[in-house]
Image 1: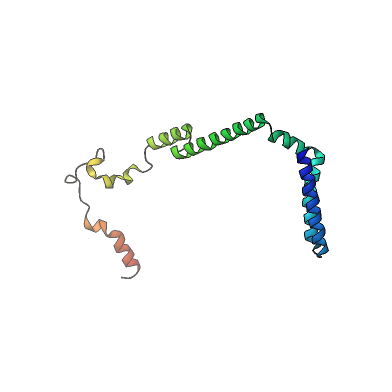
Image 2 (image 1 turned 45 degrees about the vertical axis):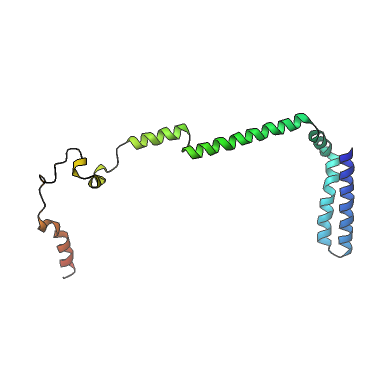
Length: 148
């Protein structure tokens, strides 16, 4: 009963302000104010205000809102932990399996490890050194191509 009275008073005040605005020849603003002022009356007529008033003063409804808030916080917390730990358990397993696979080009990282780190590699003293002419053959071809 009190909520309906308050909504009616708010609507009457809004319509009064809209009338003053229309008197000042601001018709678009007055029409907008009248539309806003009619919303509380419409809510009273549909019964939404009565439902909201019953819900606002119901301890069971507030407990329900508390449960919904707790569920929302749990969803946020699990999402934050999931992001921090690197995904779900299934995603972590897939990443671990991918890390266990051999590299695409295992010899590509071997020079940084040195010849002793490569399995089956001969020591540096036993390897044949390439002839200097073979090392610069591609460079000589480029120079001849440009006429140098």
